[in-house]
Amino acid sequence: MKKNVLLSIIVPIYNVEKYIGSLVNSLVKQTNKNFEVIFIDDGSTDESMQILKEIMAGSEQEFSSKLLQQVNQGLSSARNIGILNATGEYIFFLDSDDEIEINFVETILTSCYKYSQPDTLIFDYSYIDEFGNALDNNYGHGSIYRQKDLCTSEQILTALAKDEIPTTAWSFVTKRSLIEKHDLLFSVGKKFEDNNFTPKVFYFSKNIVVISLRLYRYRKRSGSIMSNHPEKFFSDDAIFVTYDLLDFYDQYKIRELGAVVGKLAMTTLVFSPDSKKLYNELNPIRKKVFKDYISIEKGHIKRIKMYVFSSYVGYKLYRLVKG
Image 1 (tube, rainbow, N blue to C red):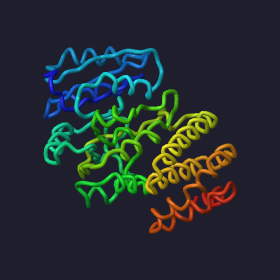
Image 2: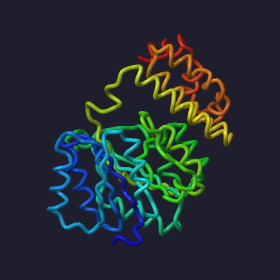
Image 3: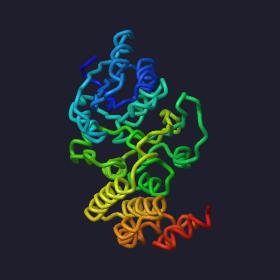
């Protein structure tokens, strides 16, 4: 089982005792067992690790697994350790408070065979609450999931710029060789690390399979990173990942990447309308990639107006008018 593993599932763990059981059960119940799981204990202080060990010991494991430990260094560091220890042909990042459908692995591997080992596969997802109940959500369920089976990197980056697919690292499976070849790692010590990692993966993926099924179950819960952070923490990290992605765009200069940078800058500004620091740092970026973003968004009038109106006073007024 340890030889020729096709999929490595990387699971960083930090204080998720309420949810780790559901996650592990979704792994144990997979209909295809040709995968390995790399658990990384990122210095948990609750009962997460004890629960994990008890469930794993009490179940008949038909997949390989390993548990790595580190002092708390954050999600990025834990994911990077997982990458360095993965042996599968493909890598998938699974958040420890979420779940996957029981046919996740089977669907991914079947698609890999069908499309002759594509660079990357993306799939749709569902929202669940803290108790696992389904929630309604419209974000990220773009038409590309229903219209395409095999896409180019340019098509996927365009969909990313339009918010038709999520930027999250759990929204795709990609070849380990692609990550290694291009030295792709998460920015350690920074939040919003998916924003400057995922577009790079998509750029280097020349053939991307699109799976219309909702294979991932994203848990929306209180107390998450996105729901409680101070403005300074938000500003510094948001600025860092945006500039990092801008440097990547400057290196490769394709309009689809410019559009993604523009979307990232605009979204950050709109979600923090009172931050002069963000405006001063990100507005020059927004102007630099203006043509790229507008060329991609030309059919979406509301989003174009928001982008054009994103001056320090302008985007505050726009949010006020829109409520």
